[in-house]
Image 1 (cartoon, rainbow over the protein chains, first blue to last red):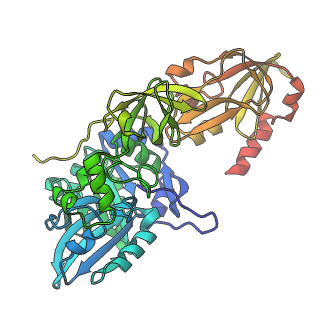
Image 2 (cartoon, one colour; image 1 turned 45 degrees about the vertical axis):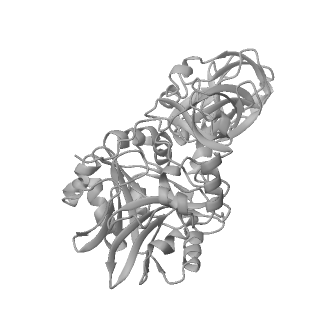
Image 3 (spheres, chains in turn yellow, blue; image 1 turned 180 degrees about the vertical axis):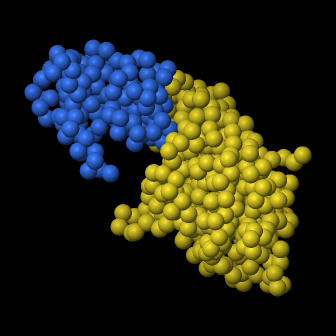
Length: 380
Length: 127
């Protein structure tokens, strides 16, 4: 989910699974300060298709994991920073929300899980973007009076995604096949405590699994030993989430975009829309009542030429109305796809657009997202 | 010069020279680095290319890369087969995956290009 923010001088960090990537023939690139696999010998197209048809394994250990705990009710405390409805989260439930700026821009997007209380303290498990984690955790730690933030630097994080992910993981951790979408549980694996969430960022069914570093390689090797599983790099992670219509922080959402402009209104409950009480609430409430000035939309270029991030969007035969924030080729979709922001009056599906690609006008149109149907687990 | 000689740039374009015709494409190394090619934007036939100028764009799933003209010349043919099957660039970069045929306007520019052996040493130095 994160943007690249490496400084050329700092040595790159390595995840606990680094050696496995190298052994798997990965092409490594700097990403958010880490040396990360962009692709493996299977190639981006093959990795993408593998995830859509079998089970793809992603190392997302660069993302930030933390516990937030408090002797007082924790929901009101975190709700002062995010518009998501944490009070409504039951134990073992996970929710997507955003850390907000006072002006209604987005600091980061994150996953929040309600854990069982421990020693009289309410607890949340947070997962934030790699490129933002230092800022996010500093912000959270200084903004919350009573609550205590404990970063989990001793844990790897992997995602197992695809229609066969449940069958694979259930072999290693019996019972996870029955977990509902966006649910979380702590499980014992060979004496280690894993956190398993049924979620992901590919549009497929799957899991994110937080693993103590001391068993991370062993657990991951077991997953890789299953016939359905292949390593998937950042390249395919990006094409998968783009097809799924999901935002990438630093590209499709950032400090200038509001959750309403970004089409993330579904992540803000009725109560929180009405009550406000989070940074940027005034802007969000105004945009909810009057409509945002611009909206994030799906964009389908006519013809085979991809239109990349930064491509200027014009009204068909007219002037500039926006910009593409993510664009490329959708391997499962079978052609170029993109998303970006346009002035609200041009956001209706079917609206004709002109994309200015390398100085040439390329016709396109607004389309609903996702580009490929989501395949989340919705129960039996 | 032999009947069909391949020369390279340090930017991984190749030129196959037959008489005064240059067939231009990207090297096997380049297609490996790019990964799966999904689109190639080719110039108009008749366009006069100056050496070093953008001649084509090759797009992988990940990114778009500019292909610069290794030599100056007029485009006399483009490989329109790539429209439907861009993956040919991955499968046969030096053969059916060619991009452009151009009539060379200044044959002396060929002297600046790398021979096959020199290019091989060059890419070995990159890894």
